[in-house]
Length: 327
Image 1: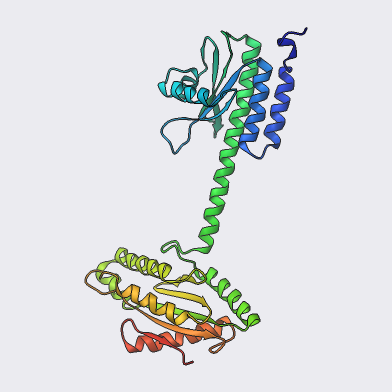
Image 2: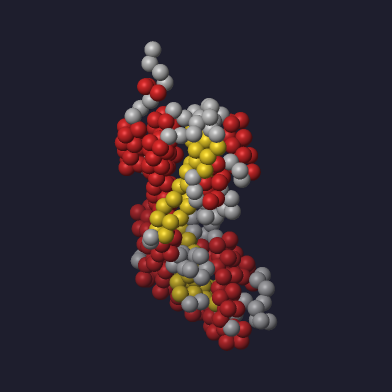
């Protein structure tokens, strides 16, 4: 009857399988599963565990295990937290560590010629296992593959986060977090096209902060920015889910409100702004003009021109008024 050693996969075969998993694996957990199980089988280990150092957390975290049940995982977490387990030592010191039945290796990657530790991996056996040179050389190679898999997954996550950030940046105003003029213009086009097909209405409101230049001069630009952020917060809280609010530049905000409720929403915005606390002793107020599609225009330029004409009338009437085009 063949012994256990003769039934182990050849280390080279295990490395080939691990390299294939790294090259083709899209999910980190799946890649680690293939890599680590191949390594465990090749050296006849009973278990393996990986702890990773998250840049946003102070301590390494046990993130992956093979051959450990729930109780074994809990014991491993406790042992690693104690700091004397080979897995903890390898991750902390960046060097190989061992006990009678465990071999641990640091997970190290290089960025710009500088080595960085990202965690550690440990392999354990049921009995004492000193490890021979060829076995340790194999486990070092497998460890390097695991380190690359972890690093690649983190790079992919960073790229995705940056892509999301740039996408948000392209569509939002950085000061207020509202949509920017580019996004507003696109939404307005879509809403007018939809309303035109369905015979519906769309309201457009333009809000302008009263005496904003005077506030900036008297209280400073930081106070002016606070005013804009406060108004943006009121706008975001007062509108409906179907509405879109944006900062169109300077001290001007705009609203697209599908349906016939635009005037009601605009009034709610003015009421919310009127309740804001004064800045440098000056009451915050905005003037607003509202226009409707199709009564006041059938394209974006016409409807915005009508809303701004209504805004001019509101400004002429004093601080904080609302002017709508005639029905």
